[in-house]
Image 1 (tube, rainbow, N blue to C red):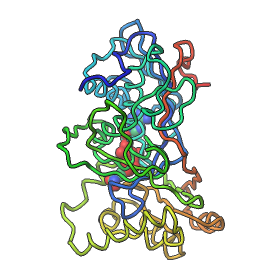
Image 2 (cartoon, protein in one colour; image 1 turned 60 degrees about the vertical axis):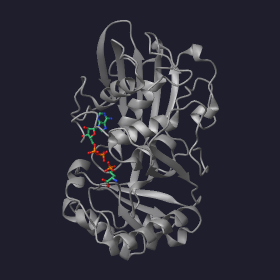
Image 3 (cartoon, rainbow, N blue to C red; image 1 turned 90 degrees about the horizontal axis):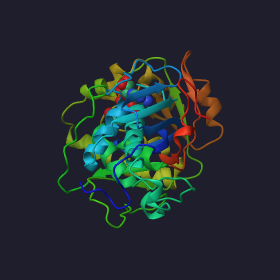
Image 4 (cartoon, rainbow, N blue to C red; image 1 turned 90 degrees about the vertical axis):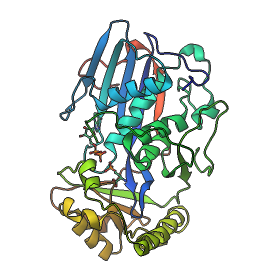
Length: 370
Ligand SMILES: Nc1ncnc2c1ncn2[C@@H]1O[C@H](COP(=O)(O)OP(=O)(O)O)[C@@H](O)[C@H]1O
Ligand SMILES: N[C@@H](CCOP(=O)(O)O)C(=O)O
């Protein structure tokens, strides 16, 4: 791929700060297509250093992830540079402050991949790239914001993750619907063995000179009352494990039932939240994974019987309730099992943000960013 306008190979001295939200995918019937950004964030600092070598620091618990070339964010950065046709810099420093809990169905791997692509692209913009171009960032930009091209980030991150629902919500914020374009798609290769439009704008933004993308996502305008409640268990379920139990085919009649609810859900999210309960029923993945979820499907059943629009969040095992009523929180809280955690994260309006920083602004080893 030719480097898009304004981008140049990363050189020592460039550094960026990347903030990316978590996400809840599927929302019931929108399997692999609907996503909702959650107000829980990972923050990364990435820099190109004159000193060769890779240095990865993790604030807090590294949660068992490898702190070398296999690290999901760094492996993604290398893949993104390769796709852009620029050599990976010899010296890289990466600082990770992650709060998105892993393996819970809150899109931690997608957030890490989005951050990696955004950091790699962000490091291809120097101060000499001039002022930010809002048409590339597709949103109002603050001074210091790096004008990464969100559609390119979304396309590569979605292909690397293997499904676009989480990645698109982490890229654009809000609620998103994604589809695979009819043009020939580049291969969807996973980066590592570690893990297997503008708001309200209904058209994919296409900036002048931007290469074609194969994954397309648009924002769904959200009714202001729609609020996510996320109920998180102690146990993890790797997404790859949950995907492995899905059948290769579904009966035509069930696909038809599901497509009606998926269409209804877009309407319910945007203007008819009173329809969220019927609109979140689905036929493609939750029952098929019931035995993998621990007790999560039983909690979904209980919440739905009490009138709440409850679904499995992503590939589980967390449970998402889409509420449009202030009284729902207390009622849901009463049903939360002992040792599960109830979160009220809100829905961030913005997705991934990349900001230029100086090397001196990088957090010190082991320290949290200011
Ligand atoms: N911030 C991160 N840094 C490095 N690796 C990560 C990070 N977040 C997630 N991962 C990797 O992704 C895995 C979880 O991905 P996955 O099974 O898809 O669950 P989730 O539903 O949280 O996305 C983790 O076990 C880890 O290997
Ligand atoms: N559509 C995917 C969503 C996976 O989400 P995650 O947050 O569990 O990674 C699926 O259902 O497999």
